[in-house]
Image (cartoon, rainbow, N blue to C red; front, side, top):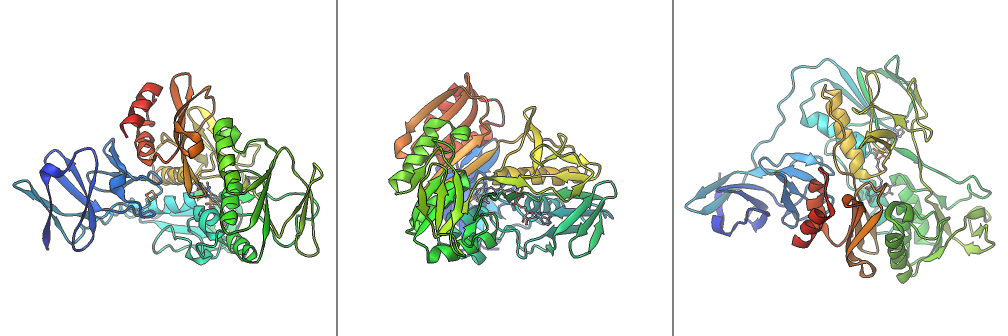
Amino acid sequence: MNMRIVARLINLPENRGVRVETAAHPVLLVRVGDQVRAFEADCPHAGAPLEQGVICNGHIVCPWHKAAFAMDSGAVREPPALVGLKQYPVQVHDGVVSVGDTALCAEPTPLPHDSRCFAVIGAGAAGAAAVASLKRRGFTGRLLWIDREPNPAYDRTALSKFVIAGQMAADDTPALLDEAVVIHGEVQRLDAAAKRIELVDGRHFDYDAALVATGGDAQRLDIPGAVLNNVFVLRSRDDAARISAAAASATCAVIIGDSFIGLEAASALRQRGLVVQVVSRHAIPLAAQLGPRIGAAIRQLHEDHGVIFHSNTEPERLDGHGAVSTVLLKNGNRLAADLVLIGVGVQPATAFIDGVQKAEDHSLQVDAHLQAAPGLWAAGDNVTFAWQQHPTRIEHWRVAQQLGVLAARNMLGEAQTYADVPFFWTYHFDKTFELLGHPRHWNRLHLEGDLHHHDFIALLCHDDQVEAVIACEHQQAMADLSQRMQQPLGKAEALDIIRRR
Ligand SMILES: Cc1cc2nc3c(=O)[nH]c(=O)nc-3n(C[C@H](O)[C@H](O)[C@H](O)COP(=O)(O)OP(=O)(O)OC[C@H]3O[C@@H](n4cnc5c(N)ncnc54)[C@H](O)[C@@H]3O)c2cc1C
Ligand code: FES
């Protein structure tokens, strides 16, 4: 193997990775004492430059969506990455660091022969993370992975940011796994007592262990005109393809609902040149999740780009001949609309499950190990699980993946509980807002930076304890905090981390 000199040990700091270009590929050098490891330099999730992330708690943490990799082996520890970093051989002689051209082999060690059949229903965030985890752990039994979408296991988060903006074809939405083999079919019944899955087309499968990772169905509106053409919801790649096609010939769009997805869609369609109006029951978007100051700053960002808000109201009906042309609001206003996007939340997709306790919102109630019934686990948007002793349901991509990994490990016989930090990101007019934690009981907001220029980091504290952090343009500090918040974190310590980054 060719070894190439890439650096001097003396030039490598211990607290961050250093990117070096070799003839073959860029590598990330990570130093611990006199030892150096070399990994692929770009995050396998979406290509972030890992030298801009942090080294913390023995992990390399990605700056963009906070995937974490073991710094000794590159093994993936936290999604959204579903595979580890390729590792390259390193030699250090007389303070000179050389790296080999060919990655070390990282094949999983197969577990002993397993005659069980595992079923994973749903090939979204949670299902794909679970399947990746089962493969990584060397599961040798039969694996049935089922989804009702024809080409599932893609990055749903790109739909509202890039596909409907016309920047990415729906078919180019990034895939979640290489070589994914998914059975195409819709599950119409899961009999938890009999451990049997029945598909709409009559096929049926018996399982030893199953994971329900079916996410949610976008809610529609029960008002006159809701079935007109060009009235959309956004959950799947097909939804996004239809919205993008309609947007190509539209001049004005109305978004019903000021959820993250509604606002991401407002940003995407506005950047495409449409007149965009957002109708909302609230005065300030996202105030319930982020508080009024940050919600108001996000609204201002939209208004600065020409989005028009109609607050404290809701639609009475949609009018049009064949296709929608007008939205009549309860406050009497009429809005012209060539397309309407309804973004008023999702309902957990669990109607097909028999013999399992469901919460009022139709989500599955699971124990601390994500188990809903003997042999049955659940993960993702469709589950209410115990987090910090509270029943919690969280609709975040990375949380769904974390839960999927946890469920997979427990299907294999472990007894893991969720001890991770929820993370969410959202993208509006080229600004990425990030949220760590799950704000619930906070009573103090401490702001560093400038909210109105969208360069800030805000601590949402319960007294002096950090409950959540929201930031824009502070990806490194957030990467650090994504690890530090795994333990209780006081405000003073958090500020120290932020000011050092
Ligand atoms: C447009 C959009 C943008 C988003 N952006 C972000 C973001 O930027 N950041 C973030 O943190 N979160 C984001 N989210 C939220 C995130 O995508 C969800 O939290 C996440 O997808 C939940 O994962 P899941 O596996 O529970 O469900 P899903 O990813 O929805 O996967 C569920 C799968 O189950 C399948 N399924 C359902 N019912 C059946 C059935 N009966 N039979 C067979 N298959 C079935 C579905 O076809 C689907 O493929 C976004 C969501 C959307 C819709
Ligand atoms: S690019 Fe690294 S986690 Fe997304």
